[in-house]
Length: 421
Ligand SMILES: NC(=O)c1ccc[n+]([C@@H]2O[C@H](COP(=O)([O-])OP(=O)(O)OC[C@H]3O[C@@H](n4cnc5c(N)ncnc54)[C@H](OP(=O)(O)O)[C@@H]3O)[C@@H](O)[C@H]2O)c1
Image (cartoon, rainbow, N blue to C red; front, side):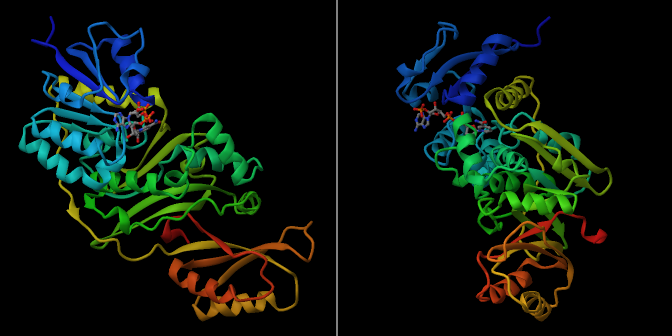
């Protein structure tokens, strides 16, 4: 016997990559108690497909959806506006919303959740981080009983595709073009490669896992654009690879957080993600480390998370309310760094570098120079003992004045537990 007295009516806003996959799953699986009744998009006639039942109303007028008897709106348009105002209007009208929009949830999630509660409606966003990997429900339910103290993740499939291809010897620009050809990267790749997409996801995870509401604009982001194929050669010497890592950790009353390329030891599960895969490592005080891994993007994997949220609402399950509090980003990770220099060879270069580092109380750990390069453009790498990025930055500013430098020095932090180094 069915537990459903009547079907919950559902509307899709945005019939793009994710929206069309959600429609496909709803049509194929026809989950019990759920009925797709509306599909909204601009210029809707371009979007019509013959596999959606004829009972579904296609519209380019948002008010038609809002004024209908739809109970759940699936916001799959993206961006802050107009998607944000549609979500607000739907919640104000007492309708529930499921969204995959990380930017909206990172910047306005707390206010929107409050609005949803005040109207006895649901706001679910399981697809907003790591696509089809159930990290958000995992944190909200499976790990709610732990005290999570750190999150480290590969949260952007585009960067992971680019860096795992560069690991095989390609340069950034050519792999970016390939990623754009596959549809993995936008024509303007800024949000992905400069870290803003991963930052929005990190902010959402910090809120749920660390219960820390951090300001996205305060999280330092570094681009992966400066990573070069040669950095992977030197990374191998340290038994590492390079990945874009988003990390946040509770430290005293503050949160340490950053997004950017890092050297990742091959023994870490974060080094194992290939292509567009995502991996998230959650460190709990009681339960230890838990790793989530899988397809972090793409229409179908992301649609699975959206449909799962819809099914959750249809079955009457409420998201566990995990209160977070406004927390400042403070302090710096103290980690080993590896710095790549490219110089015109001359005597005394290492002495100058050592002096500038010593002025900032930074110890050299090792120096490595691969054979086969000419003296007029010679790369080498200096690994330093754990230090703050700000101190290293001061030393590199001074070193940057050396006339023998062909390129700006490029440094990468090494992802290791601080107590081990
Ligand atoms: N794709 C993924 O792998 C993935 C993974 C996780 C989360 N997400 C999130 O899922 C959401 C949707 O992403 P997507 O990849 O499906 O994007 P998409 O393919 O660009 O689809 C967006 C859809 O919304 C429509 N749209 C955009 N602006 C509109 C407007 N002002 N009025 C009416 N319709 C509008 C677009 O119509 P047009 O065809 O006219 O542009 C398009 O059909 C975003 O929040 C994204 O961050 C995506």
